Length: 227
Length: 227
DNA sequence: AAGGCGTCTGTGACAAAATCACAGAACCAA
DNA sequence: TTGGTTCTGTGATTTTGTCACAGACGCCTT
Image 1 (cartoon, each protein chain N blue to C red):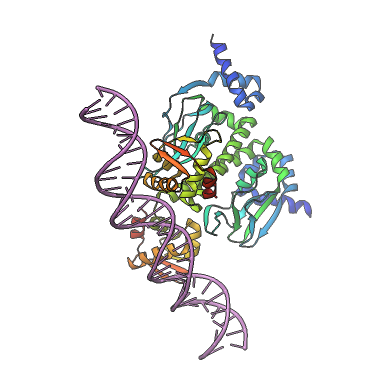
Image 2 (image 1 turned 180 degrees about the vertical axis):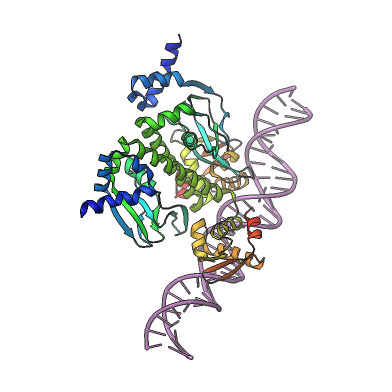
C-alpha cells in the first residue's frame, strides 16, 4: 500500500537524519508525502555548474563528489557527500535562487531522498530543526573548503599527494586502486605532474606503481613527506 | 541615561540588520541588554587562528579581512566583513565549539556590536529570523571561498592581478594606493612574483608604477589580460 | 641640508609546477 | 591475435615560488 511505502521512507531516513524524529507528526506525514526515494547509478550527475536546483537530496547510501572544473578541463574536489549528509549547496541555491556553483556527481550507487525545492523553502523558513541541520552542514562545508584552499595555496604537490595516499590506506590494506588522472582531479593538478612525482616516490622506495594501482610499501616515509 | 544609551544600539543596528526589527519586543529588549557597542582601531585582530570565539561581532562601519596564513608567512584573503555582515565563522565556531580556522583583522576603524557566545547560542536555537540571517550569510561565504579556490587553482597570476587591480579602480579614479606585498597577500602569492608581473604590465604600458602606488593607464588592456 | 633608517621595489639564479607533445605499455573485446 | 582504448612515462618550455641581495624612496632627526 502507498501509506506503508511512504512511511517506510521515514523509517529509512531517521537513523541517518535523527532530527526528522523531532518534527511534529503532521510534518512527518508531510515529509513522507513529499519525499521521493531515488537510486542513482555511479557517474550520474546530480548538479551541473550553473544549474538551477529543483530538489534537495538527502543521502542514504553511497557517495558523491562535489568539484570545480577549469577551462582547461582540470578539476579539483571540494568535498564529498556521504550518508547522513545532503547537498547543502543545493539548499543554499534554492533559498537564494542562485545557480549551483560546481559539479556534483555520484561515485557509487547512491540511494537518496529527493525533496522538491518549494517544500524545502517552506520548511526552512518555519522549522527550527531543519534550520539547525542545514546550518551545521553548511558551516562544516565552509571549513572543509577553506581547508582545501589552504592546502592548495601553501603546501607542495609531493606532500599533498603523500597525504592523500595515506588517507586511502589502512594498516591491513596497502593497495590503492586509483589512476594518476584521478589523483590529479582530486588535488587540482595535472596528470603529468602527479605521474612524475609518483615516479620519484617509487624511486625512493615509498611506493610500487602499476597500472591503476599503487601499493604503499613505506608509509612512514610517506608520512614524513606529508609532514 | 542607561535606557536611552542601550536602546540607541538597536536604532543603530536596525538599518543595517533589518531582521532585528522582526524580533518580538521582549527579545529586542534582551538584545539591547546584551549587546555591547565597540570601536576597534585599524590592524586590530578580531580572531586569531585557533581562537575560541567568545563574541559575535555585527559590523556597523569599517571593514575587516579574513585570511589564511601558511608556515612561510604567505597569506591569502578569503573574504571581507562589511557593514551589515558579521563574522559568521565566529557564529559557526560558537555553535560547534570549534576553534576559528583563520585570522580576522580590522582594515579600518571598525564600529561593531558584540554579542556574547551563550546569548547567540540561545537565540540561534530558538529564533527563526536569527537562523535565517546566519544561514544567508554562511551560504554567501561558502560561495565566496569556493570562488577564491577556483581562481587560485585555474587562473594565471597575471590575469588574477589584472582582475584585482580592475576591481580597485573606477573611471574617475585610476590611482591605487597599495604595495606589491599587499597584493601578494590578497592573492596568495609572493611579493617577488607580483613585482615581476607588474613590471611586465608597466613595460606593456598598462600601468605606471611608483612607490606604494599604481596608476592604471590602459584599463582595456588590463581587462583583456584578466579575460 | 645631511645623514640614517625602515619600508618598498627590482632582479638574478634556481626549484617546483603546469602545459604541450608524443611515445609506449597494459588491458579489453572482437 | 589484433585493434582500440585507457593509462603511464618523459623531454621541452613556460609559469610560479623561493632565496639572496642590492638599490631606491620617504621620513625623521639632528
